[in-house]
Amino acid sequence: MTQPSAARAVWCEHAWLGAGGVADAVRVEVDDAGLVVDVLPGVPARDGDVVLRGVAFPGAANAHSHAFHRALRGRTHHRGGTFWTWRETMYRAANALTPELYEELATAVYAEMVVAGWTSVAEFHYVHHRTDGTPYGQGDAAGEHGAHAMELALARAAVRAGIRLTLLDTCYLAGGFGLPPEEGQRRFSDGTAERWLERLASLRAAVAAQYPAHRVAVGAALHSVRAVPEQDLAVVARHLPADLPLHVHLSEQPAENEECLRATGRTPTALLDRHGLVTGRLSAVHAAHVSGQDIAVLADAGAVIVLCPTTEADLADGIGPAGDFREAGARLALGTDQHAVVDPWLEMRALEHGERLRTGRRGHFDPESLHGIAALGGAAAQGRPGAGFAPGRAADLMAVDPRSARTAGSDRDQLAYTATAQDVTGVVVGGVLVARDGVHTALGAPGPLLAAAIARLDDAAAATDGPGRPVAPPTQPRER
Ligand code: ZN
Image 1 (spheres, protein in one colour):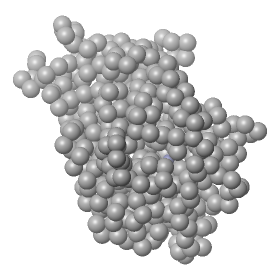
Image 2 (image 1 turned 90 degrees about the vertical axis):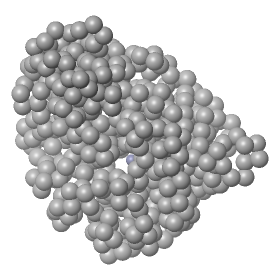
Image 3 (image 1 turned 90 degrees about the horizontal axis):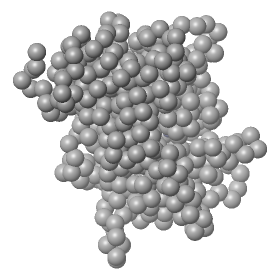
């Protein structure tokens, strides 16, 4: 039976239908907006259907990304890889970015994501201005760049890669409690919360004029309680449009909590709550070092907790209390953050493994929970419909080979504990095929794209003096 409104269809050799288990020969009918119209198990493929081999799962929604951090992978481990190594490398990359270089790098990074099975991404974006802090579109005699040059570069990159983008324009005003931005942070800052809000409104209009929201949408972020002074939190709480998702880096490290307590007398969560910012639209990223009271406040408000387990391991942030958040009723999501790993399967597994290591017990997040967190939690953090095999869901799917070296012998409903991005045989966004066997349908293999983009960024960094490169040991927790 074909629904009159179906515009296309995806036929899955096998499909994981959640608690319903794995069904064979599942045809997913999709409408013009890329939403599922009907799911029909046990039917043959028809001419023109996108065919997914292996076992299909809902596509994963990446709830936290800084695309340019991909250029740091494998470069921050010298002499053990201190905070210092990481931050110096990050600021050098941040300050070498131009809109052209960022578009090329982000296109490659988003291609890597899509090929791995991430079908949407929340980009936590703070590289807004030129390195000296002047906005694009001002004082540019050559007319080279318009306003929002960096943001629109990211939007074009996402559209080329076929990934849905929620561009979280980030308020970043201070270098710490009571401290102005450091030199390397000048291009991140709008100066005041009011000016950030004005630029955000202008960006929303510019993006909405070019893209449908199901491809590119704008959201908001506060970098952290350290980077947004308390008086500016109040301004944001009063004036940020109610329909925008709001993200914040929260309690990633004990030092952030200690500084916040010293400066304000409150934990970061309590400080945000004081200003009415802990609500159902909030996504708290990391939340690794939180009190029982913090957990209750976040969960009761319906906030999404965005865990980035492979990043948190790489940066030695600690293991967040994912199980405690779930017990309290909080919604969870996953993000790849600095992209030391871009693999939804490893991220799901790291969530369960972290909880096992933290508690000394197995069996916290079953496959249904893990896929729910990856697909629906990440979509909730972006204010989007989640992917899945039900009418009204986004027709975003990833299929894996159940007979690879990694997965052979696995029960099909336990692939969440064995598959990796290398096992992904096909990825569909909105019912359209975007990747097959590690190769992007429009852009090719991501590896050469990444290598070329990173090499060009390296050349640009070498050609500049690395403005903002720190010259003294850090005394504060890292800014990201
Ligand atoms: Zn981050």
